[in-house]
Image (cartoon, rainbow, N blue to C red; front, top):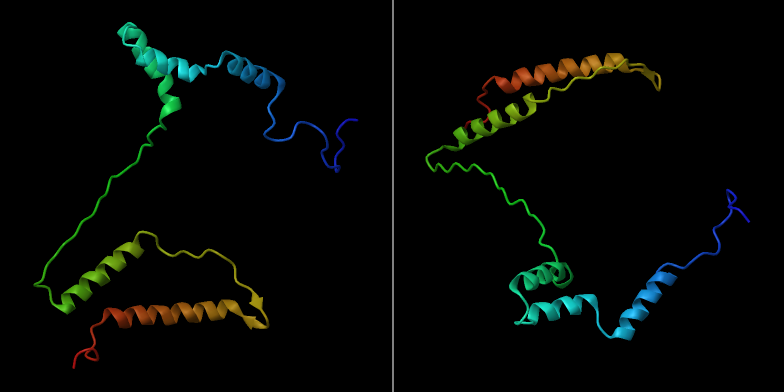
Length: 149
């Protein structure tokens, strides 16, 4: 019966079961009592064999004896500035400048049409929030005497 859409797959070889060719190959290796990798290792160990043959046997057996080494990128880039002479206010200013620089790389742009949601005019609320935010930025940029003292 051909496969029909919507029906479960039945029959076939179960996962992990060797096919006929693999079973015959393993039986032949067992009958001769020597594994190809063992044969290559015997050639490597045979000191009377030519050096070229031993080298080729070692190269062929190596992937079966040891795992390959993985390539690991270990590049570390760090910039550390240590200055004990900076005052707390200088450190704050430097941190603020770094934050502003980080956020200036990707300016916030909202491109959308606002609607009335839940009976509230969201466009008016957004405009009001923008005005409040602009006033907050102006207030933060001006030095105040509140922090001192």
